[in-house]
Image (tube, rainbow, N blue to C red):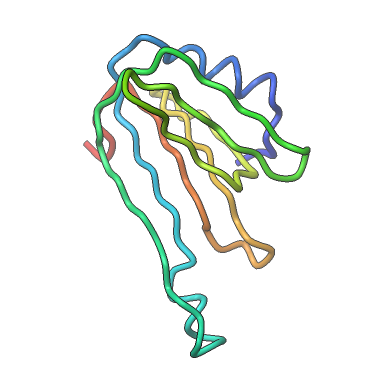
Length: 117
C-alpha cells in the first residue's frame, strides 16, 4: 500500500461514479482497546458486499489522515482516518487507515465485482 495522494485517489474514486459497485466498509479498534485498558470499549462496524451506486465521491484530508465520502441517492457513506491506498489488478480500490503500531483501524474497499469472490 502507498500513502494517500489526494489527486490519484480522487481520480480513482470518480472512475466508479454512476456504476453499480460493491463496498466493504470496516472500522475497528478490535480487541486492541481491551488488551491494554480494561475500561476501554471495543467498537467496530463491518459491511461486506453492499451494492451501491454513488453520484459523487470526494477525498479530503490534512496530509496525514483522510476522509473519503460517497454520495448515494439517499445519503452518504464515508470512512475517516484513512492513510494508505492500493489498486488491485482487477480494479478493486482499497483505502485503509492504520494506527501507529500498524493495526487496521478503518478500511473502504470498492469493486465492480463482489469482494472475496
